[in-house]
Amino acid sequence: MPNTKSAKKELRKSIKREKVNKKIKSDVKQLIKDNLKQVVASDKKVKEDLPKTIKAIDKATKKGLINKNTASRRKSKLTKKVNTLK
Image 1: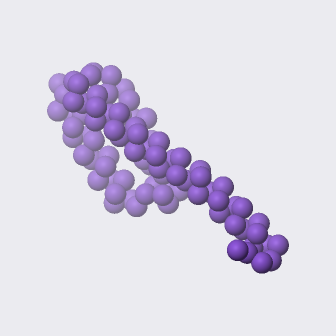
Image 2: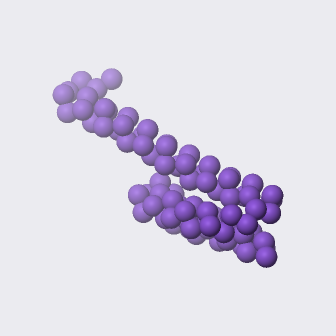
Image 3: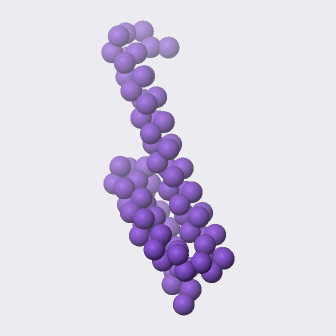
């Protein structure tokens, strides 16, 4: 447990940040899963939803929650799968 006043405040801040970061990461994962389900179901709406997912991945990368190479790989795989639907 933190002893000083500043350490207690820092603990509160880190707990809040952790919640926000977990929410963002889970939202990104859920968007990717939803897009993959749409691809499997051959839903044409996935082409409209793809930019929203890519934007969320980019925002998470900018914030440092996802490594840039991981983000690039996920966007690439997702785009390839979506482009198979024609």
